[in-house]
Length: 337
Image 1 (spheres, rainbow, N blue to C red):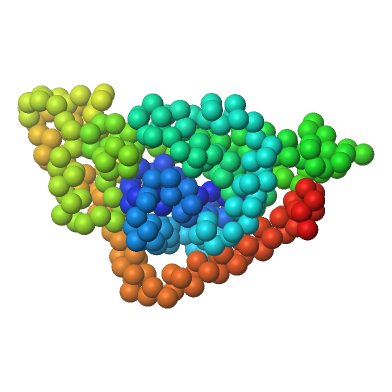
Image 2 (image 1 turned 135 degrees about the vertical axis):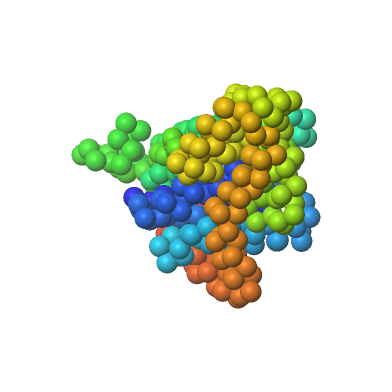
């Protein structure tokens, strides 16, 4: 089974990225053939500073490795190191209906938030599908809000196969029945991470780089402390029990503390007698316990930048081998020498 996913290098990665995706990615490297990429082409829709773009791409790779991704068990690479993805992006785009792009959730959401539409934002799902289809992924780990992207990839793969593969039957995409041909583009499945957490930000909204409400995994210690101590709380008196609904501090404590330790905090929270400041200090302690080893590993990697580049180049070579194989078939199918 081949697993594929990516992370966009459009900002510093935060604990929402970890609990929502990265933790599961590291676990999945033991359950199949895992391909993980840094989506630095996608990031260009928002990052327009070239120096920052380079830095954020490097930071995302460091984050993967610091959190436990093993480049001997998984393939880690930069999206931009495999140029075939751009070729497939164009060829795939020739069979994509305009109506699909106009109803993409991500596009409509960003337009609703006042982001000026451009081609990159509009055509984002096509490049995402090319990322998935280029490596013949079986499963793509996603949150529930990303399922539509996998549905698009499946729909467009069927359209391509129907158009260019003689004998292809959408009802038998792998060509198991006599007389049917297997598709060139494999239909991926969404692997919905039921245990992936929706992490609240310090303002109570979903933690997101777009909202500026994050706790960065590898942020400056003083900034981490400042942000934790500024987590939104209400005016409940010290002696009174604290509310557990719409309480980002409570949700973060539940997320980061081991169950046994959270049980004690939960009892104290509901009994009253402690102020929010005490609980924020507990969360700061939990942050350093949870991410201290990864922060140390990141520093070790920073001290050897040549090793990071070697890992990424090795991953790109392995990914490119798969991409080349598929694109040879795609080119022949569409009549490109």
